[in-house]
Image 1: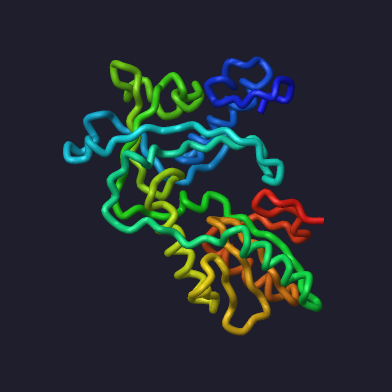
Image 2: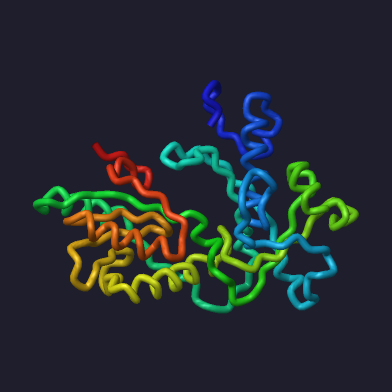
Length: 266
């Protein structure tokens, strides 16, 4: 949102705005590098996408080639508040399997917070997995295309995209790991996370989606995609959960539990 006018701006508007173009252009370059194999001196890559030529798309998958949407958001609770995410046009993906993902709703979160207040010695903290979807292999590759003119110059040079672009100015991309917007990303990432948590004694409630407990530790948490709201009695139990997550993911923590899912706690 433009602080001066109150107008909502999308990426194409931000690039043309003298007060925002530099910050958001750099943020988009960082996002592309994060999805690909990195951007020199800026960010390491998650190896989620590959830039390919048009003729590398399998003939039987042409009907599945979709578009990319550039989403900009300001998230003050994040370490990097100017966030750009490339999301896949999931409405054009023909995925044959179930894509439903269990997640905690706001009522569950509020009940959890009330439980913290009501339990002697209980505390609340939050954890946030970075690049959650991007770390999950897909069962099959998906394909999308982007305008070369939307991609920052440093990315174009590093990946030699001019040579891979089509005559009408598009770059084709194969997606080999989970990515925002793919209908199957959520369930594949959730299944992998659930398998890893189950191994260490954490289980999701059969009756309340997104509410997790341990088989004997005095700890429970709500899980919404990659955001954990954790109630614990005894710091060692929260540290155990953190160590389990850190084995496979990059994670940030807020031991004061000040913000969670857009809510601010005092």
